[in-house]
Image: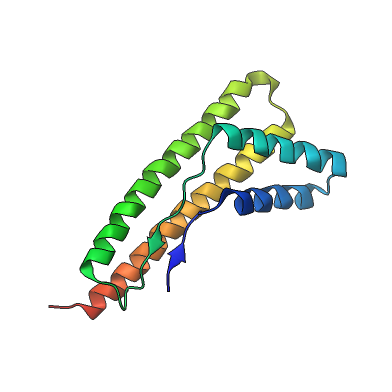
Length: 135
């Protein structure tokens, strides 16, 4: 079993945009505007790929160390992505629209959730690994 984090932007983007559109019951024109905003953000900010987390019941020490290093890099890259989203939002300044704010918020929240989920998945598997490898 391998657990994947926030690996692909498009599904995450579609989920965020779809949730936003459904929550607000937007017209097709408004949905298109939101999708355009999200795609513009994607051109500026790169979503990091989540690390693969090994199954703690079968993982080796090297597997867990490699996964921990990948997780740390993912968190660093995720923080860079969050900073980029903040920068995009600040760049719009006073002229920011409600749709722009909503898309940034949705992408930001989704990224934070993915980062937290990856850290939790690693910690869960680490505890399993440690339980199977008591000295």
